Length: 225
Length: 405
Image (cartoon, rainbow over all chains, first blue to last red; front, side):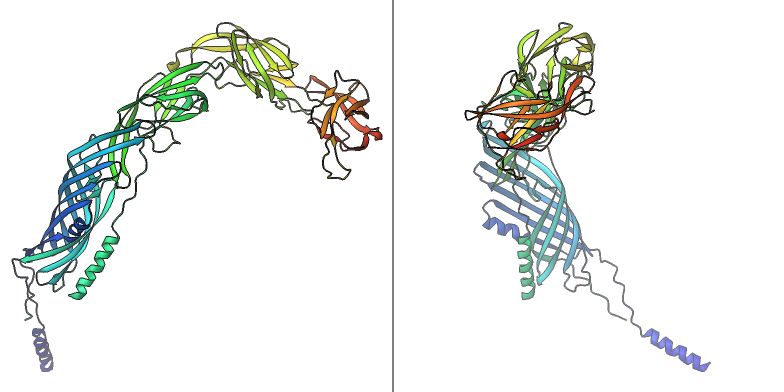
């Protein structure tokens, strides 16, 4: 019996030495910072492509592993084919949520998948010179003013801390379910933020540079006791 | 850090490479396919188009063509297109005009810098027409020809009688085979119009006089003239509501004719026409074919002779030739067991005599024919003669190979 008691006492001593991790649930859904960036790809294309001019700003706020994301941007396209002239300009925004799948990354890098809802307002002008073998030649002008559009996106991408407060990342977008308001004269060619309207779905890609502004220190895991 | 920058540059390059480069669109979808149909059964109809003209253009389409359908190019810079179609009656040749007014929505769309713009048409409709009936199958015009968006129907033509020319053979097939005849022209007693002028056909469709109960047709063939007078009853009736009251022709009968053999197949008329009267020609079982050869070898080449004429006692008139012949078909004397033919070749006359056995036989109950068998040639002076078929057959077969001396 004494031996048993000694064994039990020995076991109690071993059990009391097993570390107990502190509770880390409290407060984890409180945002820890805001990340603001821009689409470098859009800026780069604007510089080298004469037909496109645009910019996009992105922002996200973390709620533990979930991020609220907002994009705002503007596009302008100008084409001058042999048969006329086309111009399109407008603004857009997207709002949605991402889920981070890199929870244990010490730098808080983000591998995410998410959803977006996009809306755009744009105007188009088309001047054409028609050469028809039956009806002859003619010139016409067509306009779409303040056309509204909406669509949805499935997103996925990566945001990686490059240095201190500088982040870089990319986002792939599968855009679908485009809907535009009625246009009596002309079918829309391009929707800012979405792309060409001739396809039921559309792939997009952004390459972003962010600055993260923390307003709360990232919670640390409590020491073992 | 360098590793991360390099990684992002690789991804950037990959992303740019994967950007979707759009292709050019195709053409404007401004073609309306029209299919001509018969209202009675919905089957395709063949029409004789004299011309198709479209308002706003000087172009003339489909001039003098037999068509089942056509394509009309719509004016995508206007909200409507007016087309005028001029037809010719396939039987009488009279021309008539029909009009169509198409309405649609046309929207422009920029495609790309390479392609420029296109026009997208939708909500196609026919606002006005003067055809018997019309149906719009699709409200979207086509980019390419080949399909039909509009069906145009015509009411039944109820007064067409169909004549069929048939050749009987020396067999028991009661209907024989279709026989192409050379027609100089066909007159109807109620109209000066000449039908089937210089035509070769095994059947003809002719209009009965709607204002009478008889019609006489005079038919001129390359072998002579014939006539037939038909009697019938005409009863007004509504066959199809949209066509209103039309004449229905029935109780067709042959009042008089001078064809050798004639049979009434059907005493009522319909559209499409089904044979009402068949004319038959008995088999010719007394025709002998002579083939001229260079040698007596089995597969010897044919020879050509400058034959001026061939005469025989049983001929009404000599057979004359203006071109060299490699073969001739000669009618044998059905009243005798021998026939002699005088060939005049390059000014020299030579006689070919053949003998045979005759028998009488009746085909198809009305064709009393002479059957000729056991053909033999008895004039070796004419040339080297080989009998290849000693029985006369119909259709004709080669009976003699002759290597002329």
